[in-house]
Image (cartoon, rainbow, N blue to C red; front, side, top):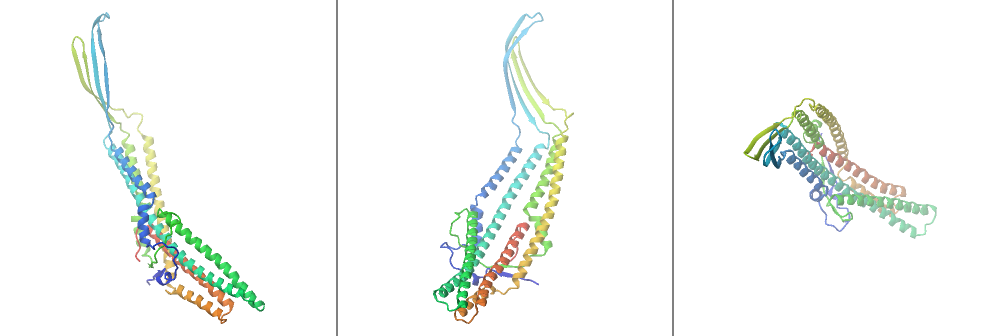
Length: 416
């Protein structure tokens, strides 16, 4: 059976007072603004540039070394008698070349760093968008809870002021007046707590948007339709393909494979080529041109330690991938269950649940003032009105949070 729940209905929000003089904005516009103005985005963008610079560095060939020498060439015979002398000079270039395939492996490793940096950037953007949506809906819920608490607190305070101005005859009316006064104080404290929660949500949302904490932000009233999540298997399949943390683990395993291949390649030495020219002038002019090749012999150092370390890190990466996969499956199953339970609970309630409680509380106030309702019933209705608002908002926010978490885990926006 398909169940759905529609939360934060327009008729509920039409009852809200204006909490600030700011122009109301939509949740989607807040998300778009955060994705442009949040200061930490610059960090992840710079990290991509760092990784790209690393790839450029990995593809660079070492510069050649040039040696220039000048001197004097002196000849003596076997009896050490002077024969002749003259100037001499020499020029030598030394260029080192990596073993074939080494440069390609280094560039492949650097490319994985770029992919990881880009993945981190996209993950942060997705997390930021989800956080903004979560705080925005909390702000809307806090507005409703504040309105309800203020409404009931003012109702009790007004009634207490009227009763205390009179001269109650007898103990019962006087005690009733004190009960109402005490209820007014208690509900006033609850209203203050609700306003504090509203302010805290607004402060955090302003910070995510890069605004001043006391910016008078107000969100326009919206309707969010919640439907049960897709089957668990389809959610798992989406999570395996799109989950950011899992994709990062796959990239890590691939990168470690390149590290192993590079460590094995480094068993073979680099090749150094040395072309040179030498010229001297004495009784004759002599010119020597040649080229030398230098190759270290891999007899004692076969890079075994680096190879073993790279292979061990590859095993670690594979184990972490398996652990991440299990954690992801567990989280997806848990959030899907939470979301489904909240949606099924919300579907049991009529669409006008909060409005009916609000009207009942207002009707109770009217009848109590006319003397047609006992104090116990009046007080209970007022308190149940606030309790029902809290219960509905708690279930609604539980559904929203579970939905947002599920979208983060699967990397997919769920259908509404």
